Image 1 (cartoon, rainbow, N blue to C red):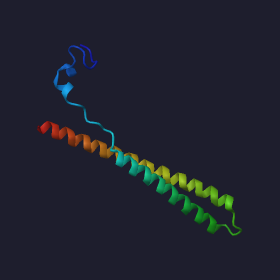
Image 2: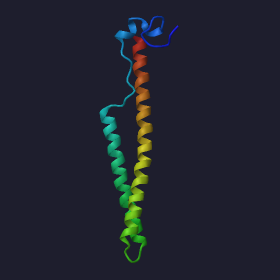
Image 3: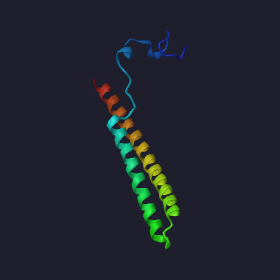
Image 4: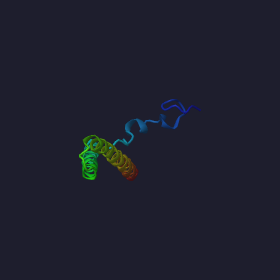
Length: 107
């Protein structure tokens, strides 16, 4: 017995699977755009905070060090929010797939 879909003897070779499309686990476009905007805003805020803190700590006004800390802070903040956004989008997609499957089972 072959495990390839659509071949003779496989569980998915019946006609009922051809009429029903599998649920997509892809998050909506709005959710992805919202996550991207959140990452960008977090990067901007992290950069501004890092720059301001370093600029206040430096007595002679060292723009290179403040800029470097600002860029590093922006990257760290953006990566942190990106991790949370990816986990949130995965959880949302899984929840939607479970709800779709539950509704399909009830019909």
